[in-house]
Image (cartoon, rainbow, N blue to C red; front, side):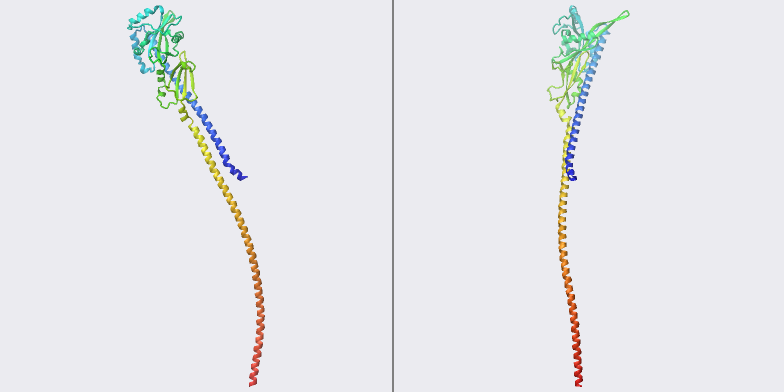
Length: 414
C-alpha cells in the first residue's frame, strides 16, 4: 500500500501543480483584463478632462472678447484686430482657427449694415450664405474675424443660413450661455475637414431706473478644425511611438460615422475587439470619445506575464514530475535489486547451510572413523603391549634358562 502511494505521488503532484498553475494563469488574465480596462478608462477620462480644460480656456477667451465689445462704446475693425493680436492665439490658444464676432442683422437693415462695414475699412464686405432658412427674419453675420488672412472667406458669412450653426447660435442667445455647434465644415477651410464652432452670447447691461435690462449685441465665436483642436489636446499622446490606442471623437451621444469629428489614425491599424467609449456634455451639446486599443500592443505586452506563468508552471510541474518519477523508478529498482539480492543471499545462506550440514556430516563421519581408528589403534597397542610383555617374559625365561645352562656348563667343566 505504501509503495502504491509513493508511486502515485508524482501524478498527484503533477495534477495539483497544473491545476494551481491554471488558476494563477486565469487570475493573471483576469487581473490583466481589469488593469487593461482601468488603464483605458483612465486614459479616456484624462483625454475628456483635457478636452474640457481646452474648451473652457477657449470659452474664457471668448468671454473676454465679449466683455471687450460690451464695455466699449464702439468697436471697429482695427480695434478687434489689435485685441485678437494681443491674445496671440497660435501661442496661447493652439488649435483655434480664429476669433470672430457675429451680429444679428434684420433683413430690412442688411444693405445699411453692408455699407457700414465697407466704410469700416472693408471695401469688399458683403453678406454671403449657404442657402435660405425658411421663416428666418434676420441674418447672423460675421462682422469681425481674425486672423483675417486665413479667415477672409468667412468675413460677411451669414452663419444663420446653415441650420446647424443657427441652432447653436439661437441656443446660446436664448440660454445666455456658451454653445458648441454640431459637426460643420468651415467655409474658410480649404481641406473641407470636420470642425465645430463655439458661440458665446454678448450682452450689454443698461440701467433703467431700479431695474436693468440686457441688450443682446451678438456672439463672440471661435471656429475650430477638429483635427487641429484634437492634435493640441493629444499632443503628448501623439508624440509616443508606442501609443497603445487610437482615438476617435464624434459629435453627438453615439459613435455615428457620419458625425465623426476626428480620428488619430490615417491608415487603420489592426484594432482589438474591445473599445472604450464615453459621452459627455460640452456647452449645450454632446460629444462622444472612443478609444480603440491596438491589437499588436495588446498581444505583445498585455498577456506576457500570464503566459509566462502558464508555460513556466507547466514546464516546472512536468520537470518535477519526471524528477519524482525518476526517483520513484530508482527507488523501485533499488527495492527490486534489494529483494533480488536478499533472495540470492537467502539462497546462498541456504546453500551454505546445506553445505555446512553436509560438511558437518562428513566431518562427523570422519571423526567417527578416526575415533574407530584410534580405538582400533589403542586396542592394537594394548594387544601389542601384552604380546611384548609376554614375549619379554618368554625371553626372560629363555635368558634365565640360558644362564642356568651356561652356569651348569661351567659347573660341569669345573
